[in-house]
Length: 194
Image 1 (cartoon, rainbow, N blue to C red):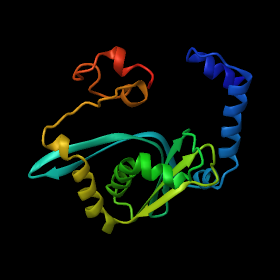
Image 2: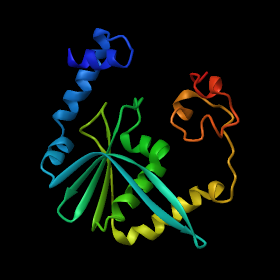
Image 3: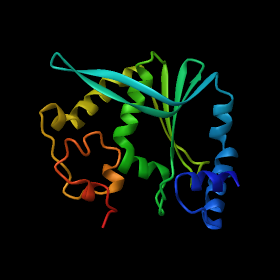
């Protein structure tokens, strides 16, 4: 009933199949080693905002975001990002490498900037919560992570803001430039992917 109420609260119909699917995802995570690890962490914070800067030839580039979970463990930090993506035959690590590699770099830097001796970034795909895609970073990794992030931000740093040629809701709905700075109309940016 609680799951159905949450679904209906966002204006969607709560079908028995959807409720059963979501219940299965929640039960899978509840029984996982990652959940047990979070429950034994020294401190756990949800939806934790972060911000840090990168030096770009004497200018500062602001990087900010929100972590699903930030957990303090001894001298290290554990960052957990929940994913509801369908794996479609791929491993969790393959999906992270294909779709979330930049996010992993940002999260690792955010954790290392706290002074942590170790930053562990875990992607928990709720389809397979017992197989998180995990990468561990140490302070010595920070310069390489910063270089990778600056390389990825090259267009932004150089002032090139090229909109996608195929706008759609999944890509555009949370873009801070949409609709005020985007050259596409909201009808395109908020449409389903064809």
